[in-house]
Amino acid sequence: MSRTFSGHIHIFHAFDIGEDIDLELIKQKQTLMRRPLIPSKYFKNYHKPLLVELPHPHATSFCESVKLYPFGVVSLHYKVPFNSTLEKLRKDIAQIDNEYREQGVNDASMIYKSIEAAVKKPTFFHISKSYLIIQLDTMEELSGKQVAEEFGGMIVSILRFEDEQLSEHKKDDILKGAFGYYRGDLIVIDTDAAFLYDDEFEEALDLFEFVNIQHLELQYFDRILDKQLTQAYNRGNQPPKLKEYMPFWGTLNLTSVDNLGMLKVEISVITERLENSIKLAGEPYYSELYAALSTVLDLENWKVSIERKLTIVRDISSLYESRAQTIREDIFNVLITVLIFMELIVGIIHLIP
Image (cartoon, rainbow, N blue to C red; front, side, top):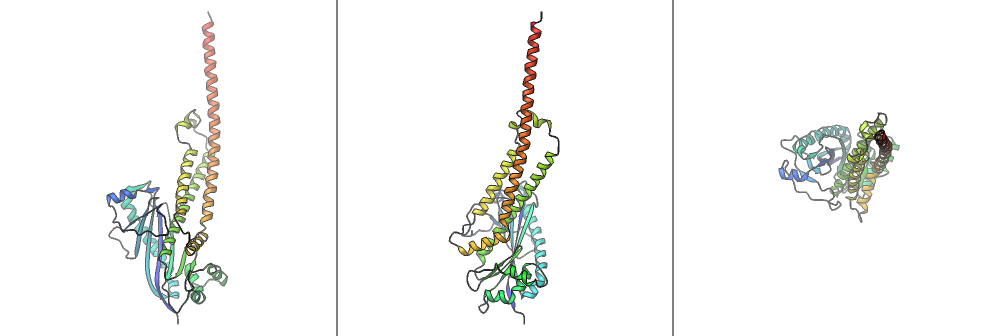
């Protein structure tokens, strides 16, 4: 007979809705009802969010929290209870995920409309990122190791949103990274979902939400740099504008290199602060959890990709600017030569009786 489990499905949705959110303006105008925020001891206050409630009326009763971050992100956390077998959960999980993806977009849209005036360069939405967690209530008679041995195949199918059992090779590949703090715990992390069998899971949820936001911002910056690369390529295929070659034009206007420098500073500040916001010194369990999340979500390669694209765009832009500067200098030299020639002609004319 199949065992019945109780627990919750935690779903995190993060949306990038603009460059910045003025949290102080939202507080002053009271556009959304605020809730008291109890910050996690594992995070610094570099990017302290504003905790608010969904605008009324809203359609869901399972929205656990709504957080607004100053760097333009809205993060929603849904907590959906369940009491069923893992077989039934496997059949239902894809539908639940789709339902709350739609719910997340609708709820984020309501929030966006309420705070649009406080958002710099508002757009709903630039990009979004979601992560789902299956959290099972623990049982004294069932350890984490037993859960992995008896239900491992079912767990990995749920994490991959599949209706059927995965191959043994794929199951073993996903489960080999499973870990826990105590012997009875079990955490399985995959690219789009995770499984938690742990009494003390609340603080781990904060880490999952934060890494989801970190992943969102890395994808957002990567997309911006893709646009910069496209613009740089198109610029090379188009004839330069005459004003670009005018002397002193570059000193009177922000060049593409200057704009790129500002973008690089923005990317560096936000990504570094996001990474350094996590203070896990002396916390081997959460350090291991963060490392596992970073590895599975490939955060390091996203950072490398961003740095590589920054370098490429900077090199291309510098090349164009150098070419334009050379032509400006040539034009300037020609103008000087023409002026000297004209002065010579004027002088000769004055010498003629």
